[in-house]
Image (tube, rainbow, N blue to C red; front, side):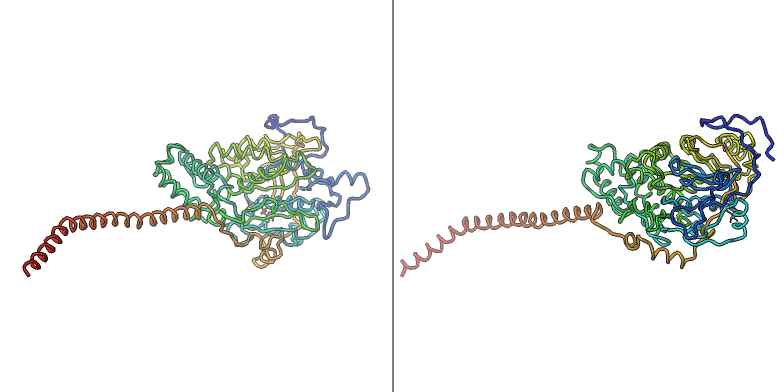
Length: 539
Ligand SMILES: Nc1ncnc2c1ncn2[C@@H]1O[C@H](COP(=O)(O)OP(=O)(O)OP(=O)(O)O)[C@@H](O)[C@H]1O
Ligand SMILES: [Mg+2]
């Protein structure tokens, strides 16, 4: 196997230790001691490793999450799990199963997990697994003792159908992410920024899309007046933003904006038995709007980043976040957004959150982000086209070389459910890359049925918390009120004005008439009196 090349000295900026030459070329697999793998509460916990020293050496440590077996157990140290990670591989090579195993492992160790379920097959983590033939075969191959069980799961769904609805307010999302969602030009983004500023100054709450629409309408009307204070606002660009907003609404984003907004503590829950809840976001429909999907997940990360306190390097992560189809986040992303991702990933570590990007091609993740991903699992890649060959080469170079493995070649040779693995060792250095057979899941490999999903949702600790939307008074209502008040004031002004206009006219009329009567009436009266006197005198 793996023909040894004068392998190019690898690793992009990673520290390499002098590796003690390990025995055992690449793939010889020893029968492992029965692996425990699960955490605090297992229904069918495997008995803890035997006392024999050699067997003990075969065990993944207590405070770790077991990945699988190479010439030794491969695992992630819990205290280094916040140094992020990357799972890559071509389609059908075992990424989802790997992710499922990791999610199980973290949950068992009391660490909550958030993941998006792009194809629906990850939902099975909520149900007990079965000894399917490939599961049995793999378990035997690596000496893994399956402990079939279900895991505590909270289902979420942006559209509120396959799980609790997840909502965020427009103001929480902010102008940067909204601009990305609406694909705005730089100039339009500038105007959206101004809109947010005005909303802040005028104390207009921006909760849902209605609020934003009302605000934009208002802005367009007051464009002239506002331009002097805030900068150039043209009716045309406001109109363009309004049109993008309409498109966003047509994509179903309306569901997502509003209240009750998601509290980050609700994706960081642990079950009564001490296991971490696995939050599974239904993303099959969501993938029809890839930008909404990617922006939403980034929003969630940013929200976590803003809400959570600094904890430094905790004994175990507060949350592990799997970002599946991560290429969607980076594809055509403007620099400002990439900077934001880079910043969030870099800083969220000290808040105890580990982020694991899952994608087909390792080149999908920009260098600035990739450099921060300490734990790596590389499934097979195909290398037919020059671009694919480049991906293989660069994927190989991110690993700390193992003299016994031709990394580049191994990436193309890996079988299904097999991966090159390098995780951070006890000193926080990347371990030498090893060909690893990934453990099978304890929960179901495959989707839940509709009724199973319903049962999980009904039993959820968050039942009733997010299910109904609340439409409290916000910008839309406030601007409507403002408009009504203005219209009323105008109305109230108007009759009075009309009356006064009319009355001033009638005064004029009566005055004139009066004056005329006085003027013409007095001589008339005089004449009447004169003629009466005259007729008396005649008598
Ligand atoms: N660790 C494993 N051990 C043995 N077989 C595995 C393992 N992982 C995956 N397989 C086999 O490969 C199949 C596909 O795995 P999986 O769904 O995880 O691939 P994937 O990379 O997520 O594919 P896609 O890109 O289509 O989502 C599984 O149904 C199983 O039969
Ligand atoms: Mg998959």
